[in-house]
Length: 282
Ligand code: ADP
Ligand code: MG
Image (cartoon, rainbow, N blue to C red; front, side, top):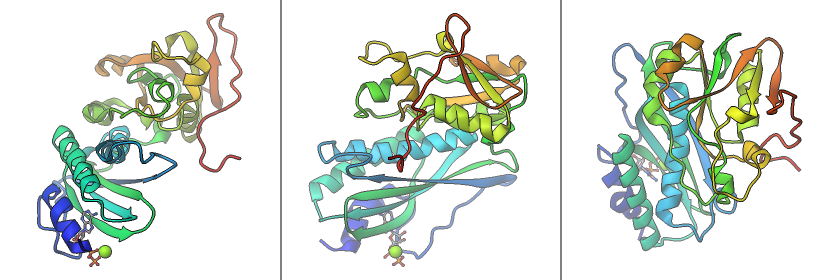
């Protein structure tokens, strides 16, 4: 099987238009602009060969959808660059099937990509749309904002990352309308809240007893607070708008200062030493 047969057989059915052009043309609705994000998955780092191809495909797409959700964007299309060590038809069929299921679930289609031979890895570049000038950033939090979390933290690390995340894309609209700032929790709650606090020039004061944690796992709260890949959303908004964020929990407030302060049950700050995931930390 050759490169073009792979594209025709497995990838073209995922696309709204034939994959026979040098570029794809994407229609951006009037009054809107594009937001773009890229995430790469490597075998041995983000997934192992024991994981099913459908799982890997869905994880690749979902981590990208999560970035759109954090920006308050609606899904438009995605590009897939994939490097394959060999042509494994069963693996490719399973991979495409996983993508197909999630395309339907989340309302997005493939618009193009690249297929090469090499170590198993894939990169998805995702496109979304927001009303012009309205993409939500990490830097927009204001003093007095409440900090909201979309769901429990710690499931992915508790399951040793053998866990398919649920991107919070259904929240895009509310995020776009009411969040001053947002970030998705990919590298650990404390680290990602830290990014939002730093970008906004504020201190995030969190209360440990208010943070919903995954139940029934083997880990301590501290381990879950620094575990990555939950893909929940953290949002800062005006207190009077918090009620629009249905199902979310207030975990803290934005105050003058910098960094993340984690208050214990007794109100005394807790020291946490490992901030979160970093690919290049020794
Ligand atoms: P070129 O060499 O001109 O860049 P390619 O031969 O790489 O074009 O790709 C041919 C067509 O197939 C293009 O439209 C490209 O977007 C699409 N394509 C290639 N690989 C993939 C893939 N993995 N997923 C989706 N579309 C793909
Ligand atoms: Mg190419």
